Length: 75
Image (cartoon, rainbow, N blue to C red):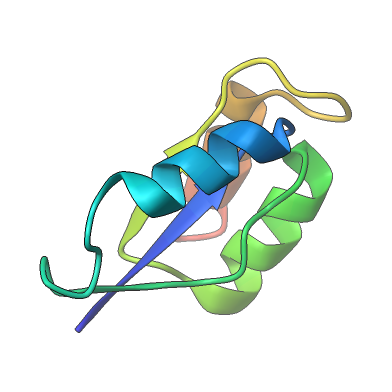
């Protein structure tokens, strides 16, 4: 089973994406959500998911900075 992670500073968006589809039926288990850029990066590096849905504009660090940092770390 693949691992997916949702990183967004809006809780309603995170909940909506979780409820949008049957993740398990599609072969994904959901990791713990990231609640902003810094928290998301920390969880991304710890969990190393296969799929990440990232908001671009977030407090702390942006989604683009988060993706760049993840790539530099080999994810």
